Image (cartoon, one colour):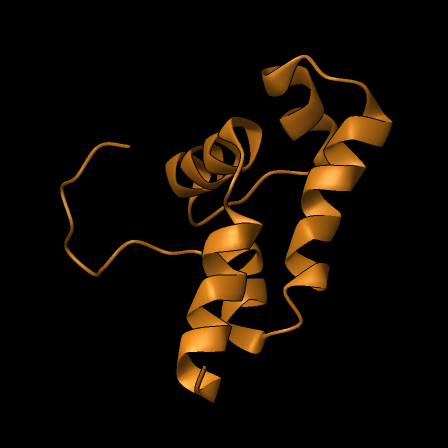
Length: 83
């Protein structure tokens, strides 16, 4: 597998759970103000340790692109999409 394919595979793995996809949707909805971890926990109604596990998945991906998917998510300028 080439490096690009491996990077993309890690990015998809980092999003490979329903809660992780929900985290992305919540962050998109909160853009540009963002959310603190406690707000994510309240929205997901999961224990802090479980949320930590899901947030750590981006670190496991060990790719700047995968980390950006969780940390610096932003819709395209002038986007009217609703997530």
